[in-house]
Amino acid sequence: MGRRRPTTDRQARVAAMRAEEQRKDRRHKLFVYGSTAAIVVGLVTAVAVPIAREAGDRAANEARAQAPIPGVVQTANLSRNHVESQVSYATSPPVGGDHHPVWLNCGVYDEPVPEEHAVHSLEHGSVWITYDPSLPAAEVSKLTGKAEGEAYVLVSPHEGQQSPIVLTAWGHQLELNSADDQRIDPFLVRYLQGEQTPEPGAVCHSGIGTPAA
Image (cartoon, rainbow, N blue to C red; front, side, top):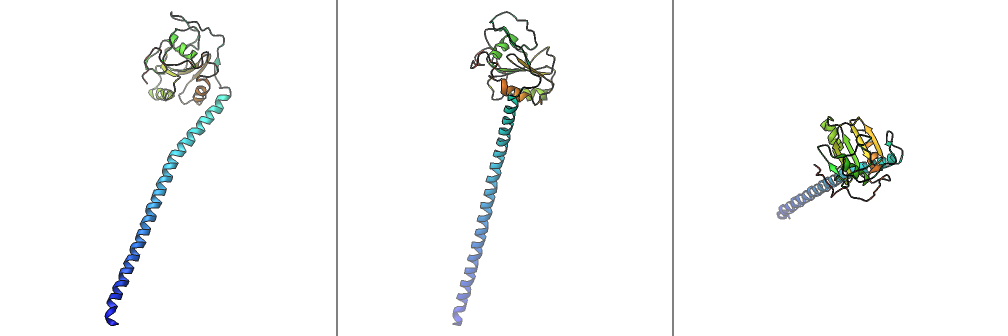
């Protein structure tokens, strides 16, 4: 019996080593699974939170757009004749009226654009965002960002306007002092291809002009 003791001891040590390895393996798997779960939760949160915030902002803008937007000036009974001569408009920038037969392609322009062509774009349901050429670059960048992904937004500098920033749709205009004004997004929601559009569904591409963006 005494001769078999070493074998028994060795078997016990082997069993103990295997048990320890199994414990380590279980701890490793728990760590890996836990880390993976944490990463997945983090990724889901990172994606879901901005989406939820964006959806909330969009809903808020849509709600504000349903109510009257303070400061919007309306002009009724605008003529819509096609002319190839220069037009003397009553407002700067113009809110509508006679215009060139060819519209201006929507997008962002670095230089002032011909008013007669831009007015035709308003007739198609675009919103024209104009700014004083002296507006700081940071403010301009915020305005040009409003055109991203939008097929009916025009952005351009405009000489001679009374306010730093002006938003114009056909027959509707809003003067602003800052690109952070909370009325900008509701204005876009309400008037991009809005009920004021004389020619809903008409395109704002394939006209004239090459936008910078």
